[in-house]
Image (cartoon, rainbow, N blue to C red):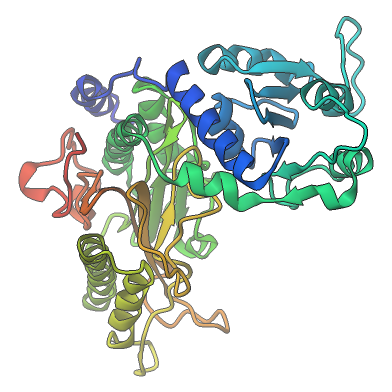
Length: 454
């Protein structure tokens, strides 16, 4: 490992990260007021969002729960007053610590404990008791409950309890309400995401510096993970990605003990979580060898797709066009992009997913804000998004028809009014950075769409 280079990267980026900068109590109170105003407009008396390690964005935004541990948990939002977080007895210790920032209440419930543990000194309440304290029963008055969580995530017995107490017709799944509110970001949120992306650039330089044939994927990931923690990223949006050779087909596969071979393409990805908010950096490079002519054409075509999509986003922001305009421009670029496959045919490489998705208290699981062919609304006024363009080198029959299994370029960008800027400074092509002791991104190589968010 290039320990000296890694340390120089850390020291170069440390002054750029304000490690004590975080969401304050006043902002949480503003969030609750926005949600409660929207609830009142729909006649909701109570709202419920459930969370876990997998679906932590809603509760993180509502109450500052950035470090869920072990059990599931939830947030109950009354029509007035502060929310109450429901937690298990073990993870509840961590959650109580998280809530110091937001000031939300907490209730330890047996429904959330680990299934077969015996917590002798824990004092449990029940979800029904907490709901009853927030929404007192009044004979003859119907009480409307909004469920903010997707049916994929909320425990079935919680829904049954709410329906049994208030009636099935009065328990409404309204996932759109919260998702739309938290789609629009405050200036504090946009700055936090900016810092997360500073860390992402630094961690990625660490991976590029150590990457060489003969290393295991996990060895490369370790460099990024170390840099991220040293710069203040407590966790990640996904396990650090290092997929070499045929493992590229996994698209977002975590690093393994596989040994990287000379001449293999390696897709790398990091998503540092800085004080609850996520950054991103993903690129694909070749280990220990230069690109061939066909490989270069493949990678250049991918860069062309990035340029088309980000330029379309800039145009859409300035003109107020529907965000589907961005998708149309990307698809138009693909329609005219034809590369020779190994059989001599002229084909368009397949792209696996939407070009742009929302981000915030998760890397991509915000539930609203992706740019698709069907999004007729313009981009939000004040938002953070991720541009994620990729090519798969195999066809629908899983046959490898292009020289690279999978290649990706992913960055994060901000939009404020009519202005857009990419958070990341990393250039689109980083092949010449592989194995080099680069501790800062050279100014003449900075991403052409980079703009500092102020």
